[in-house]
Length: 387
Image 1 (cartoon, rainbow, N blue to C red):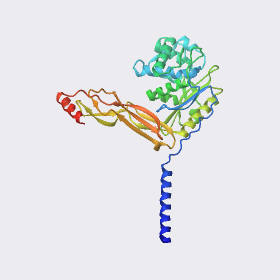
Image 2 (tube, rainbow, N blue to C red):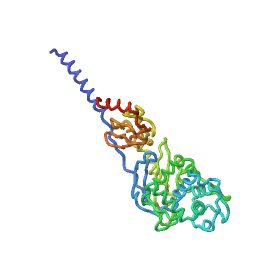
Image 3 (cartoon, one colour):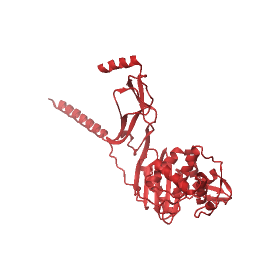
Image 4 (cartoon, rainbow, N blue to C red):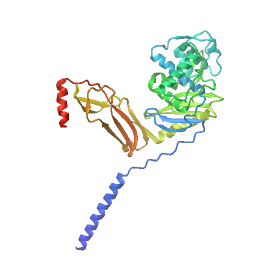
C-alpha cells in the first residue's frame, strides 16, 4: 500500500472515530441534579406543585401544630361549599350575635345585632382575618360554632386531611385544635381548584368595612406580583404562620410555613421556598382528562371500537430542562369484551423520567359499550379464535 493510501485510510478512520464519539456524547442524558431546599427557620413547612401534587420540599410536614388563623382557610372552604350547593347566597344577611361581637383577637369590627351580608363577612375573614366575622358566619351556617366545627372536620375527612381537628372557626388556641403543613397544603390545593372565583379574594390587599380600612397581613402580596394568596396566622402558641401560593408561567406552587418567629420571617421563608421551586422545577400537562389517548377494538359489543383515556388531566413536575427525558407508555388489555362501563379500569399510562418510573395512572373506558346482538357475538367469537 502506498503512503498516500495509508494516509487516506488514517484520515477516514479518524473521521469515523470522531463521529462515533460525537454520537455517543449526544446520546448521553445530562445528569439530573437538584440541590436540597433552602434551610427554613420554622417548626414545619411544605412546598408542592398545585397541579401535579408533587412535594418539592418538606420538614415535619406531618407534625400536628396549632394553626392560628390558618384555620380560616377551612372555615371559608366550608362556606364556599355551602354556596356551591345553593344552601347560601352571597347577598344573604347575617345577624351578628353577642358572642361574635365579643370574640377576641383580630377583628372586622362588626356590630352586635347589625346585619352583614355573607359576602362582606367572607371578605372580612379572608382579607382582614376577622375572628368576629368567622364566628358570625359559622353561627349563621350551622346554628352555633361547635356544629360548624363539626362541618369543618367532616370536610377535612373528605379531603384526606388525616392529622387535623378543629374546635372553632377562627383559630384561637385549644389543645384539641390542630392541623399540619401537609393537611393545609391539601386544603389549599382543593380550594384553589374547586373555587377559583372565590379564591380571587385572597389576593386583595385591603378591605374597608364600617369605614375602617384594614390591609391584608400577607406581605408577599406587595413583594411578589406572582403571589395571589393565601392566609396568615399568629398566636403565641402557633408562632407566625403563612400559607402562600403563586403562579409563574402557568405553574402554581403552594408553600406552607408554620411556627416562625416574626411576620418578616414567615414572609421571607415562604419567598425562599417559592423561589427555589420555580428555579429548579417545571410542570407540564402531558394529557387532558376525558380525552381519547388511544382507541381499541372491543369484542362482542354494540360498538366495534372503544376510546381509552384518563379520568383527569395528567400533570408532571420535573427538574428544569429535562422535558426531553420524559417518556410515556400506554398499556391496555388486548382483548376487551363487552359490556364495558364508562370509567372501567382497562390499563395504565406509565411515565418515566430518564428511564426511572415517575408516575402511573389508570387508563379507563371513556364511554360505555353494551353487549352486541346475537350475530355480533357469534361473528366475534369465531374471529377471536383465529386472531
